[in-house]
Amino acid sequence: MALTLVTGGTGHLGRDVVDRLVRDGRRVRVFARSPGIRSDVEWAAGDLATGVGLREALHDVDTVINAATCSPIARRGGVRPIDFFRSPSAVDVEGTERLLSLCGEADVRHVLHVSIVGLDQATLPYARVKLAGERLVRASALPWSIVRAMPFYYLLDSLLSSLAWLPVWPVPTTPFNPVDTSDVADHVLTCAFDGQRGVRAEIGGPEELDLVAFARQYRDARRLHRKIVAIGLSEAKARGMGLVVSQGVRGRLRWTDWLQRAYPSMRSAA
Image 1 (spheres, rainbow, N blue to C red):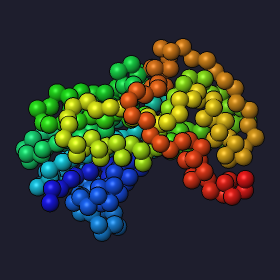
Image 2 (image 1 turned 135 degrees about the vertical axis):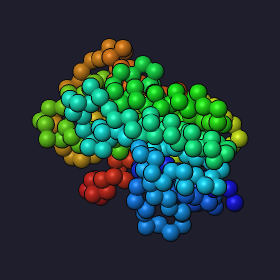
Image 3 (image 1 turned 180 degrees about the vertical axis):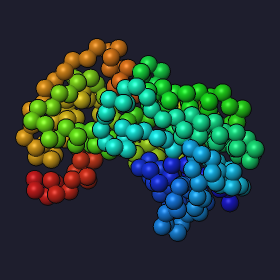
């Protein structure tokens, strides 16, 4: 049976991808720094940032789904001044370059790389790092696919949680359509195994709302009493921050439904 390697398989998106691969009866190997506890997949210990264990992890692999990334903002759930000046590249650039090289040596038949919508005009250092990694994939002689996704709901939840202590929330009015990782995982699996290659349809959430509306729904779901102050941004500044609306495929799970799942006590109290 063909073997699929998932990098970043212990992250939010990676876990959903692995779940669907197992559900579909596919043989799965997860590349992670520390093996997990689930017994229905193979585990390969290693680190994309250093390359440790990667050559061995690619043995007999047919398809690679590269869902690995290193976003300091996502890890800490908030923005710090340093994020406007630099972002680590060991995973997303050097790690991607190393992965592509070793995939070529291992005769991997397909590399699917998960990226982000709106990178071309985004100016944040993390976005520039992601774009550099994506360009390496595009230039590769390997059979490759790229799926760009909008930011995930759990990231929006983390960012809004970081504002929860403030009595007033300054929020841009920019249109946006974040998406759930479950919908992205469904799209990734379709693109991984439908025989097509290249830049695939990007995916975003089902609702195109401004960020103020998303913030209000979050505030109401958590029963917080906060004032939201709408802030206007020029289109250029919004795009520079990665605040865009995706084109292509739309997910199914709405933000309000995600909030009900994430905060079940709020739902039962309604």
